[in-house]
Image (cartoon, rainbow, N blue to C red; front, top):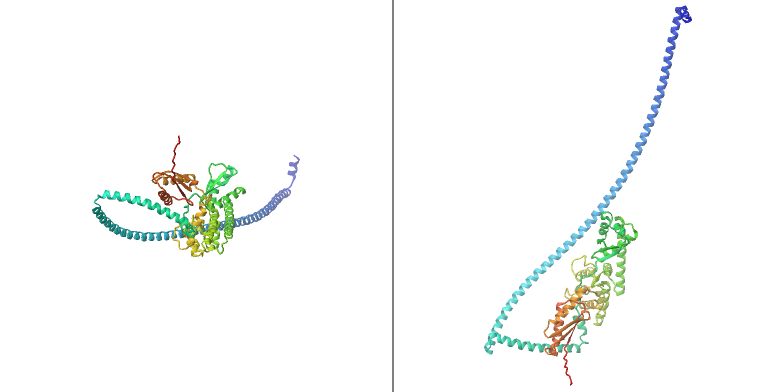
Length: 528
């Protein structure tokens, strides 16, 4: 009530001033609110600006880091690409070299085949001409024989069958005794003049030798400590064993045999490299393709050095000088080659010494004989890599590396493959037979040994008058017992001679075979 009363008492001017004051307060409030809002908005704008600047700086930093990372990754991938490209190029170069070598071998084989074909054609022409000449001679002889038969039948007044029977009986009887007498006479002359004819016998007669045999060992075994190591040798999906076979050129056989891995190859040097490499990898324990290549390369260098030293030592022991370095390396390779179980390098050393001894006994140059004897089997070092027999390959190598013609002919003809144009060729052949046939030098399989003994006895029993035959002295002698009633002393010499000739013609054997014929007469009486 008091307020209403006071309001009613106020004048209009006072009311207007009050209203104006209220409006001024409202306007002042709005102004203050506007200023506060403006200040808040300015602060917000500043914060947004600062946040925007910080975001831009962070974005620039992230962008710079991404660019640096992308550059480093690009460089790494580029280097990896360059390395892979270079490896691929090297593989392509190696493959190109192998293909070029194979092409050269194919060309050589083609040339050899062409040469052989021309030789065969020439031989066929010669054979045809000889056949024509023989046919003409045969016709002429048949005419003469017919004429002689008709004359003989007229004179003897016999039938042809009767005349043939009488003639054959007389000729056979006369020839048996005359042949036996001739053989006995020649043997006696040979025994009497053995000292004076010794040189001719050594040079021209002692040329029987054992033929080559394929019993050379082609496998090597490597001990494996555990089956787990076998798995590591094989590798994941066979990766390691494939890398090993590619690097060494051998076949690796991993079967159920406990504790053993078999390395197989015809090249004895490759087989030795593979064996040593596998043993080193097993000892090291790190088996992966890269490590395999490193170990194989290291072993190859080591073995090459050893082969060179072995060749130099052989030349030093044999006192041979002026040999090409390639020949030295090939001589070293012979230390890993065997024939009938006999080491070829040691066999070559023996042949060198024996050849020198024979040559000096004959008054010839012992140095040339010793050099030819040492090199006579040099072709066996590479006969698994080149086409042809080892005498032909050895002769080509000696000719290529500057050896004298006497050496070349002795190397190529020590098995009788070519005609001997030098006196040293039969000497080397004789020394080769002596070294190969000495007791204990070579071995042969039991089956082959038994077959040789049976063949000896079979040949001896094939002659008329032979009662029993025994192969003794490990097949180096055959003891023949004849029927004393049907075979006399002179005919015994003929039978022994014929058995020896037939053994020479039909059998291959090391050294020589002695034929001993026994003719025994026993008279038994009893005194009662």
